[in-house]
Length: 219
Image (cartoon, rainbow, N blue to C red; front, side, top):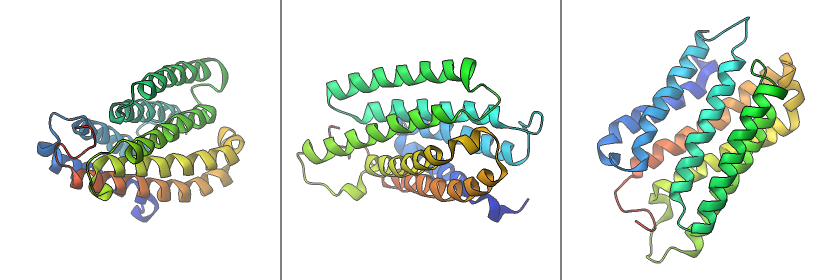
């Protein structure tokens, strides 16, 4: 195994280690749930690299599960970050709809054994909108003066916004190639995955390092 080909895993591992170190400070807050979540991500990625989940030379079935759990965790976390009741209500409805759509598409349309690219696109849209709502609140409802670069929520939402925007644009352009297991697609995906994951998990690591109780607007 050449680790230079799996830089995204090293960034995920880094974020998990930082979260684990910072867990005593984050305990009792929504940020503490990143520790078990990132542990799951690290185990999944390492198992994928080692072909633990390969069935008939494909691990796309477990990728569909991981992508869905990634969406559910981050969407629920982002709901908790919002302060506006109408935003929270509509976002919860969007999450429920997206989960239902994901299950139906996986069961009856794109299937469980191929990469469900339509699910990825819809999930990315919901997460992108969620991040934009957070930034809207940050600009309009923050009363006390603060440095946004010291806000853990700023870094979490920045990482997710960039990650989801990159993956949405990629899958919107190459969804057919992904669904058909095109080899050229996988070569292109490797570079995109390394870049987008490096951005996301670096931002998460910074968020955990910035964490202090009561620093978020509304706390």
